Length: 410
Length: 208
Figure 1 (cartoon, helix red, strand yellow):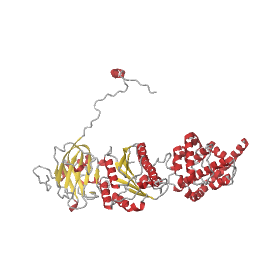
Figure 2 (tube, rainbow over the protein chains, first blue to last red):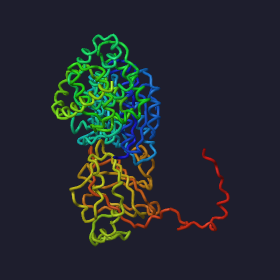
Figure 3 (cartoon, rainbow over the protein chains, first blue to last red):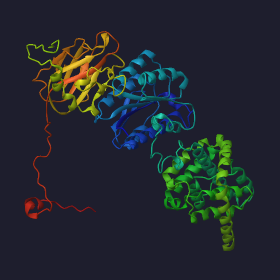
Figure 4 (cartoon, one colour):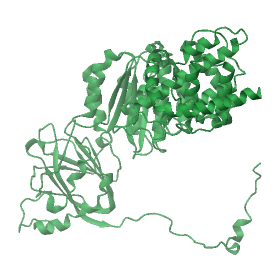
């Protein structure tokens, strides 16, 4: 990992109030900046990162190795005014020139989310100057992507020259996760797709599976995790309505069509363990509605069950089997017991990543993508169930035995 | 500043022009810290180092450096020893590609194109030389203890791109004196008697 000093330029113009990125452009940008910052600092302990705003150009944080400083200054950013791209880049370059260690390579990461009103000539001029001084520039084009595309392309092409791949342009269309788009981009992946080895908390990428190596599996894992979470939500609501005793089972059945192996057994187990905090409202399975509730739950859960989640993790097939058999309208009580049984069982699963509460929070934040993916969920899930059928059989038999035992205990 | 011709032709300064002997004296390329050589505005990354060839390979046109955005080139050259720089030979590109000026700065690491606007330690007007016969003598007094040399080629003979095939240095080298710890005591087992006066000065402080 080369030594690098990076200055991140944030777009804090009025255009950042727009909500086409969830929840609004400014917040999505903050997430993305955080991601980039963490990656840079993780890549090499001596790396420096600085922060600068493009509208009302101001250096919020000088080059530092402390990610916390960047984060705190980042949160003070408020949208106001219009960006001045060239001035911002020049000041970023100046900040880099005054870096403490001249051995560090210089890099500027620019987030552009509002229309740039500069002539191409000026842009090319600045690009040439930076190229001469051996500075690399990465540009993230979001928000007003069409308007700025040509200008920014010209900029990055000038920066790269004939050959040369030091500078990148990433264009992100409106989507829930700006920082996710970045994770798979050359900005974080590196030019050979090497990617961060220890990024995203815990053992490698989310779910412990490298999206490069096995994208389908990674997608399926993520999707099934979100599905599982939804299912758990339904469960909670059903328990709350159990006394009323109406639509518990049908509601569950709708939510759980064939969940595949989840990397989310942790959340599952822990949530049912703390089922004492019942999810209110028998509303629909809208991800938007449940998101806040789940977030609160996750927070409560991570606070109390740091240890519990550790032991409870690692169940691949249990959720599968329980999910599938749920389709046949299993008793809610038995379900809960089965889930609790998982805690006793210690089947190793995909990774020990699940035992990290911080990771759960990350994962929860990716929820917004659930609804559109519900069909994708089923498809992806269907492909995985084929793989897991064997596991299902063994665990199903185990399950039944345990169910019997529990019935006896009752 | 430059003498022409070679092979049995001596100038006022009494320089040897016998290629073999020149070769011996132009051996400072060995003392260049190649991994840390920086060449700003080079078109192909890391091509800047290629011009520091052994004397015998100076005429090879395989490796060279070209400037990228404009005709300026800036070299930051650290040395592994202290150098007494006496002369420089530059083989440039054909026609307009050849640099026409050379500016030297001594012992200023990591210079950039802005800093290089300063007054140089020495400046030369270059003549086109495609065979490495023109030597440019440096002021001995100024360049008597060089650990880092910056070479700036600000312009050329008219082309958009400056091309350099070879840069050779003549001079002497001495081991650089590293100012480290010169007085120290090594103990295999500390003896209280050796530290009597200092131990009793310590101040204890409770941690909890």
